[in-house]
Length: 370
Image 1 (tube, one colour):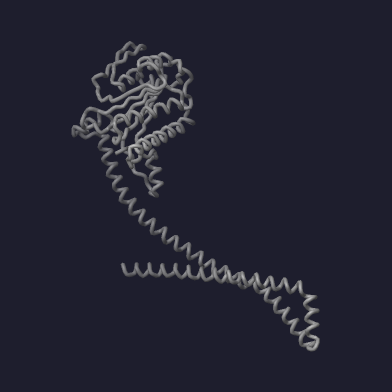
Image 2: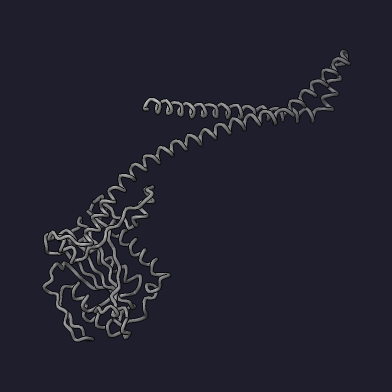
């Protein structure tokens, strides 16, 4: 089973947090904070599977103490953390390859140093929740280990959203590629619930669940109800009702689409018949009038000079040949046009009959159901 989860948050000194303590917790090790002189020991935590550094050639203690020393402001932002859920279908090697590849992509994109750690809790209740933590520096880090400029593209509200969306899309691509490589048909999708509902044609998106956190989750596992757990249970109940209503709404929408399509076909058929009638009345009539006038002139010449008719005909042909040829050509074109219109009228009439017949059957079916 694979689920999509990617959450980004900041670790700032203004909130009273220490990035050295955060790094020690995620690495499940002991690190000394040189700025405060405190030692942060999380070796007893357990659940650490693998970890590494990208864009930094030393350990996490040197990286994050240097980050603390670089930032002088009392409310400075020290690091960013990316929390991601890992597919249960992958083994430890596949997860390590996946997380390290994503950390390398972040380093190449922004020039930052990344500490990545994979966790799989030892407790049986949480053993099926493999996940990873990535700590990102807020400054570019050169090959010589020196901190450079701030990653302002991630600080500004006008540009940070686009970069986070790019992170989410890259993680989706990487996870699906890894699942495809091991022959799994499961795929993850980074789209929001609203976007998924719009793509499915649903009028309302389901409500998202609220993250319990470690303390509320532990209480829920012990059977004690929490406020967050109650809110999630109410949301699940509402989502079940929404799912049933959405199924009914889709059925009604499909029926409306069928009716709308038949109505459109009927209107097109009626318009085609009307267009044929208009063209058949307006266009061939002037041509036929010219043909009749030409024939009347020839009949009058034959009656006036019966004995000299052959010479009169030759004279008329020499005199009227250009006009006659234009008349004949125009008549031929008009007759071909009338033929095309006749076929169009036949097709339109057949279409109209089919539409009306379908509507009649449907109406009779509704009458029987009543």
